[in-house]
Length: 262
Image 1: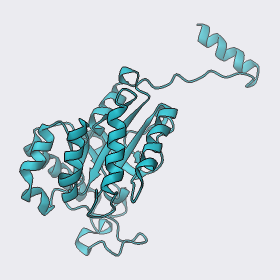
Image 2 (image 1 turned 30 degrees about the horizontal axis):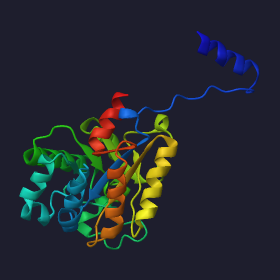
Image 3 (image 1 turned 180 degrees about the horizontal axis):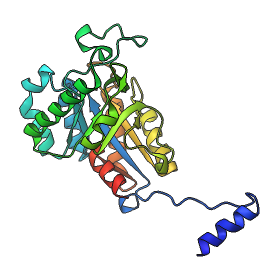
Image 4 (image 1 turned 45 degrees about the horizontal axis):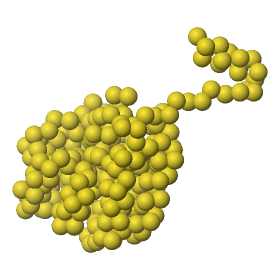
């Protein structure tokens, strides 16, 4: 009743005062949440990122392209990562992207998102979920849209899979500014390429200032493509491990399960 009265007074004064929004509350009074994710099923993720994460006791999410030869060649290692508490996320079967966008001449004709229907892509994504279940036995999952593209055959496909996933990462963007405005079906990610450890840590601190979250999506670590150096990655992990009481670092699935429940 007191809050309602205050709101009415503020309206009467035509904006002379304001009611502060209640800040989002993270577990154990953490200042922010940090999601570490790795896309595209790359060798450097198994060879460099995963051992570094385990050494620091940090959990992360690996978004697998299910047709990748590296998945079958090193299946036992991906399965072991899941058993260690890391998330295996859905990154589609074939990593189709729109070839019509600028700078997309690398997209093969058979993987052109412009020439597949939304319904066909959704069928493939659901098949990928079934394949992931065989690997890790999990039934709840998150999804990262390849290249951040949201259309298949010119039609939006993400709304068709909202019910299949706890949350979806669909675009690149800054640190989350306001948890109240977060769209769990279009979560923004920071995709570092060539960033220094100091630059990565600065983004974590910014999320702490906002009381929100930062969602890192890495690709290669010290190799492969769109890479960040091994040293920069290690510097970030060391900072997160040393400040684990301040920043809650966990899988994207665990973080988003908490967000949707609160």
